[in-house]
Image (cartoon, rainbow over all chains, first blue to last red; front, side):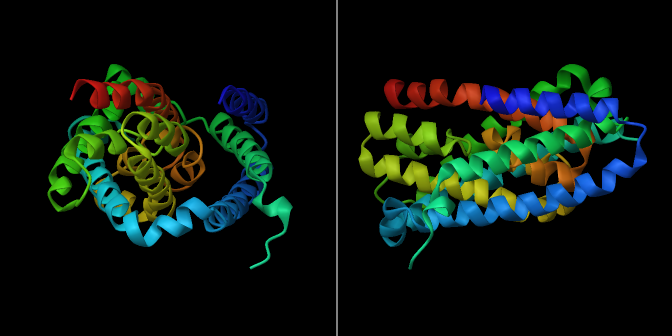
Length: 92
Length: 181
């Protein structure tokens, strides 16, 4: 986790140093997009080749999904209130 | 089906993630607007992880009516992983049982996947904090790139803050729920 923080901070520094170089933003955007796709693909493989996950999916997968739906729905709903009440007016 | 070892290797995903984090950092650092929202909301940024905690516990409580074989207490503990599947499943497995541990693993992985896939939808219908809230603890790393891409760099730092706070809270909250109730 610390590695991630250090790496991102150095990225922020690098971005700041090059902030006036317009030619950077488009390639960076494309790299980010494809790296996300790659990461999703690798995550899929990690999940798909994990015996524990695959063998338990039918039995307890449904319960896990229910809990996830409850958790995400609740989080998204409360965050909608917070955003509307406290954050939206602070945007340009 | 045959999958080459190097693809299964979690090192490869780590390297891709590190690279991705670097470039997300670059996009944040080069954008002059990255700090504009934070500067205006200041302490209200704490409301973000708080919203996630309240929303998760409330949502899980409601849905636990339909969950068979898992107690409300265990469901709440599972939800308190906030997407942090590696740590939460270990804790829950040790204290509540291995079945609950696997449910925790599945549920929190699903939370991360749902966030990765549904961010644009959440953003459109529920506002700019919704993807960050959905991601929970993962909004500081694995879901940060997707969140930044669609929500913008102004909310990226909020995502990192909220994700970090929640990541720290996970072991405490999970243990608290399982030992006190």
